[in-house]
Length: 450
Image 1: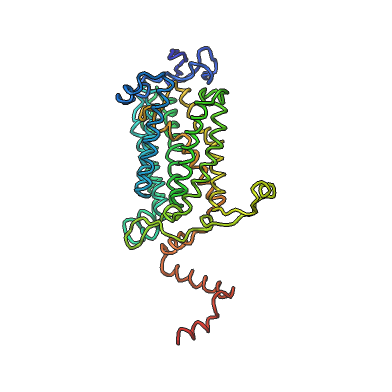
Image 2 (image 1 turned 135 degrees about the vertical axis):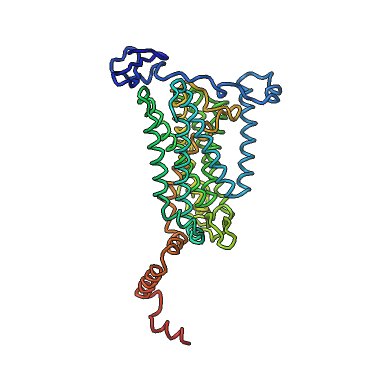
């Protein structure tokens, strides 16, 4: 049985399964470059102007280009102010904000899928999507708690059980969702149901996994959270401003408004901004210390002896620079050098996260993921580059910055049985004594007797 929908051909095989193809395509596949390669997305609030009435009245005499400029500017300032307030409120608030943003981004992407295939009435699609979101978050946040707060887990009996069998519980929860999906398969919609199953899992990979890395970066120190996010915001703003005032040369077809002038101007502005922001934040213990937990209050703490990358050091300048500046050395925080690499990635590679999102929206013929923020679109429209940046920051820390963490080792030791702890103690004591770091055993005994 052959039928048409939105320019594509659907035919039904003997087993009743729907197959999707392009009009006139004998192999049953839609051409990705065709205007009819996907079902049309029904209109939604994302396609409507939700600008506050007072802003529309204040800017009603301006041309559309300048009206959009002022709307974006006002809302950007409001979001930046909110970002400062959240930072002031501390790491706990930041964790809840990241989780809220993650849920909203997931909702926006899943809603697009639901709207695309809503007419098919796929059973359990939305319920299973949210169930998988809960399962994945349970797994990731459980791993984080066990990894960073092992000492706290050891003091609470229920948490000990959950930590010990965390991965098995997580797998059992996912397996339940997997079985529910199999049971929900309907003969006429097999292929489309598997499309949406894959849609959900790719969304989880893009949104949930990378938002978990944002939390991991935060625990390394708030500076690893603030600087990457700030430089992406700076690059977005400066690229927009340079493109708005000086843009003439198109950069990429996926985003016609992006220009080479904005891309290059954003790069240099972001590197300079990141360098000075790193200098400013490196001076404060509140930003550079890893987020830990106070065993007495069971609350988060950011107190420590700053690591070497947050201690001012003297560097010898290259000869060419010495002749220009007439100065042989310069004092810098090592983190400022790291900030140059972070800023370069945010400016040169980070925008490709936005281009990816633009391609996705064009594939489904939508302007924005949602209409949450007037002039900006949905939350996902603002965080498409942030997730890519968070992944790079996590990999960068693990590859070039992070060394052995004594506190994590100690937490793992505290989770062992007493006899295991004694065995490790004797092994370590013997090793240190053989290396001459500790005095011989006899001397220790005489000291104790005295």
